[in-house]
Amino acid sequence: MNKVSYLLNKVRHGVRISPEEALLLARKAQIHELGRTAFSVRSRMYKDKAFFIYNQHLNYTNICSNACIFCAYSRQEGEEGAYTMSVDQIRKAVLDRIHEPIDEIHIVGGLNPDIPYAYYLDMLSAVKELRPKVRIKAFTAVEIAFLSAKYGLTRKRILLDFVQAGLDALPGGGAEVFAPRLRRRLCPEKLSGEEWLKIHELAHSLNIPTNCTLLFGHIEAWEDRLEHLNALRDLQDRTNGFLCFIPLPYQPGSNDLKAGGPDGLDMTRMWALSRIFLDNIPHIKAYWVFAGIKAAQVGLWCGADDFDGTIVEEKVGHAAGADTPKGLDIDSLKHHILAAGFIPVHRDSFFQPR
Ligand code: V47
Ligand code: SF4
Image (tube, rainbow, N blue to C red; front, side, top):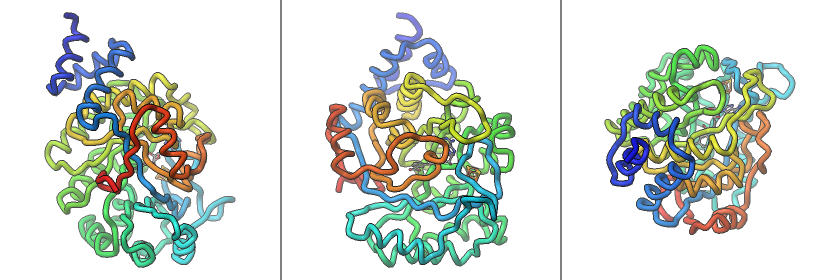
């Protein structure tokens, strides 16, 4: 048996592989071998089910004091297209869809130095008041670190205040790639990978579940991807607080990074390696918004088990050229999952069937 077959066999038997072994698979295994192994793992966990959620995205401001080179979404104060939603506008965005059975509201924004601390609490309470049953997944570790530095409050204080105001979970954004040498080029002002991990560890210790991401398909190598996945797996071993891993395919439009973006094959390898390597993170998302619907359908055959949701309306990836719809209705979402050969399972924020 060659080394690739030996390792894939090990994974199929539920034995953990090391980052070095995963790197060998990333370099040497054929796509069909990787895909088949990742499929056998996800099938053992979820049979032929694929999850989706009825959700709404709210991007409350695009004004950001950081300038990540890959970001097409952020604006400076006063620049054309810069906006900040008032709490009343947030209320209106929620009320506009109040007749829909939305289970989760995903709220993230830029680092806007002119927003008072009370705004965040008011925004959370306003959403919960209008929709008491909705789960709010809001604010990346980057926003939490920014608020902590700006208002001189501990990260713990902020998380506890936010939970009291209605926060249920943290999204996985802002992780990018942890490798410091890449971060210096991609997002020099952003908190380090270590700090990102510390904030998620803190959230887990407070019983706040979180997601995790990797921005891939730009200037990183497989070594960097696996170093990143290994840091996530190590933290999950300690806390078990991550619900879902989302590999985010880099969108190359309207930003200064000038890298190509992953092709379908690279995305497929990424989903497969994620499922194979992250043996302790329950869910892998094929995020149709960034990957495209057709690639995400293939992702379900290669390790992913979650398709995300209805969204309406996503701004970060679309600013960078994502050519997917800004949202999908529930019937289209179910149709795409069924057409891919899976049973759609309508889930809540914590992956419980609805
Ligand atoms: O943090 C910015 C990324 C993230 C680009 O937790 C880009 O359930 C690709 O994190 N190309 C926001 N990506 C999106 C995100 C997310 C999405 C869906 C679900 C969840 C979840 C989280 O988007 C940012 C950044 O990493 N991003 N610019 C770009 N050009
Ligand atoms: Fe700001 Fe986030 Fe864009 Fe970076 S990725 S510039 S932190 S909005």
